[in-house]
Amino acid sequence: MYGDPTADADPSVAFGHDMPFYTRDWHFDPYHQRLTVARRGAPDAVHFDTEWGNWEVFIQEKRGEHHTHAGTLHAPDAEMAIMLAKENYARRGPCVNIWVVPEDAIAASAYEDADMFEHTTDKMYRDPAGFQGLRKKAQAGKERVGDEAAAGGNP
Amino acid sequence: MTTTTPFDLASAPADARAALDAYVLALADDALLQGHRDSEWTGLGPILEEDIAFSSMAQDEIGHALVWYTLRAEHLGAPTPDEQAFRRDAAGWRNARLVELPRGDYATSLIRRTLFDIAKAIQYDALRHSAWPPLAVAAGKLRQEKKYHLLHNQAYVRRLGTAGADSHDRLQSALDALFPAALGLFEPTAGEAALTALGVVTPSAALSAVWLGAVRALLAQSGLSAPIATVAAVGGEGDGAGAGAGAGDVLRTTVAPDVGGRRGEHTDDLGAMLDAMQSLHRSDPEATW
Image: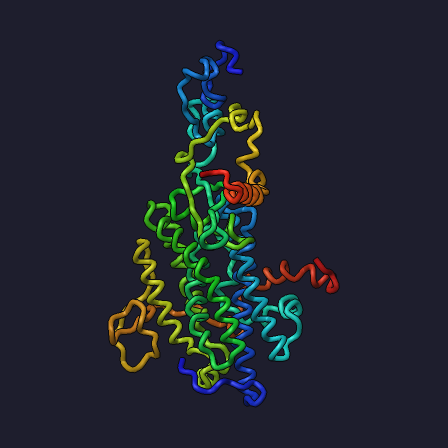
């Protein structure tokens, strides 16, 4: 799976192609790889996208709830990013709060490593559904212990 | 504005009723034309994100116009909002000239929006206390949307005003060109005095004084200037001396306001704009979209 040792060590592709996974140097690439890839094609170009940086926008629909990722926009600073995010990402649904995060503050895993999130054995016990009937089992266990005590099982 | 007795439209004298209609019509026409002019930027904005934000604010403004036209239709005997918007010649419009002027470059549109939004924020804020409940309720609702408009405009004006000579000069040129027409926002509508006496609206002169203070404060933070001077107050000036002036002083402009819009005297730009805006309705009044 970490096959070809001659592959170009491309940071935008999965990390660690050329080493066994148990010795490899773990690192995470910038989330946005568009610019990285574009710059590789034309390293001398001034800028590919815009003079302004990318900001990731997170919207909170209700106070106390999680902020959820809504999208990306260009802005010169955080205040402008929040200002622009309002109409770009919060003009339809409910919103009480916006976070903006500069893109280079975000690190991401690589899709080539998505297999590490897969479950190859049954992990039902991590699912809330895995706990169904647990109370019943506990009750049955208590009753069994109680019955044994009443029968004088222990001195 | 001090409100004691609620204003009852049914028992109001005819002149107060006509004055109220003229006042609400001016609110509606200001909002619709500001929104329409700004919508001309849709698809042409300087960057995608700003295109969307500016277009959204244009929609807000057209929504505000709908609120005011609906108020006239429901309470003051006016025809449907569509008929008010699409079946009127230039002479029947009561908007300030500011909002009919061509959109110009982005600096022009941004400065117009800025001057307009500060004026409307102040006006809606005051009208929340109107003695006529429908007006007070509508103003309170629309005032809420002004908050974002002010945030948007200030974010740009402060940055562009201080960013460099080019952006500063463009804003300053737009400001110089538009300031007299912006003062025209405070040209009283016909019969306004009858309404202020009843506590239905705040005197335009009082709103103007607050506006001068707010505008001057923003411009000072932005490296820009407008012909606004502080003069010693002679008598009472409502609550207008509050923002920006020292106690006992009031702010005055030193240029002549470009007025006439509230009397139906408009520039040729309005006629050309209405030709475009009303063309579909004129060719097919039954069209729906």
